[in-house]
Figure 1: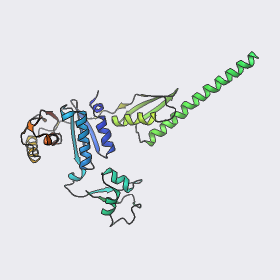
Figure 2: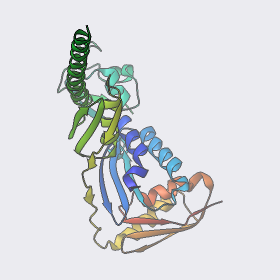
Figure 3: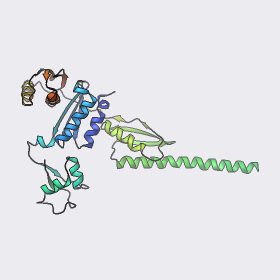
Figure 4: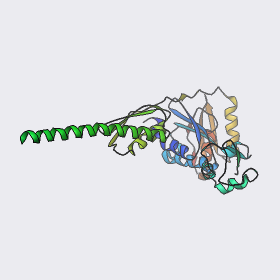
Amino acid sequence: MSVQEKYQTLLELANQNGTSYTLSEANGVLHIDGTAPSEEAKQQLWDEYNRIDPDYRGGDLMLNISAGGAAAGGGQHTYTVESGDNLSKIAQKYGTNWKAIYDANRDILTDPDMIQPGQELKIPQ
Amino acid sequence: MKVKFLTVLSLALILMLGACGKKDADIQKAAQDKLAADSVAGATVTVKDGVATLSGQVADITVKNQAEASVKAVEGVKSVNNTITLRPVAVATPPPADPKLQGTIDQNLKKAGCTGATVETIAGKVTIKGTVPSAKYAECVQVVSQSGAAGIDNQLQKK
């Protein structure tokens, strides 16, 4: 079984919870470097890692995930709206709810159903 | 009478065979559409007698699994033969000998409250030893995993 196969559920979870990552490998050690949208999302990944490899003894994975919010030095995270987005969808990515994002962006949004591609939304922590 | 029977039989047979062939093509088209809809890039699918064969090279194992799940969900697909290969991942470049690595890890361990943990760095590979409270264990391992080290030999114990 390749290392990637061993940690496939971890990678799938990363895809689901909005963590962007890159893979590299050397000497049988898989490196996953990336950024999770929130501290919770990062924790989910570490929980899954612990499930696959209890107490992280294998030495075949270097999980280097930073949480998006924390990496910005506690500053607010911003998200650029893409075509097809809606507030609920964006909120899901960051583990928050649409109302919180709407409230944080009242200055540029007048209707939670009307967001435009290219708009920069503040994502509350 | 016998001739008529044979004619009907062969006609039916031809029709059935024709239907089968068409069905494979339809299933294949549906499977291709499904792959596109699920944003699976790099995989191609062919269908013969209801058996879908996936081939191509994709970015990572999650894409390979997704391709199989997508095609399995297509009506008419009896089984999936997944021959997709994975694009070789980049070779992690060994970090340049970083004399500060050990110091950085020591510092971050201290910051995380991992007193009792000691690290030793040899050629970018970090060995962590010692004993820390159970509640701190995961956090202490994280410090090393996120340090940019090439590898980890985790011998840390829980109290």
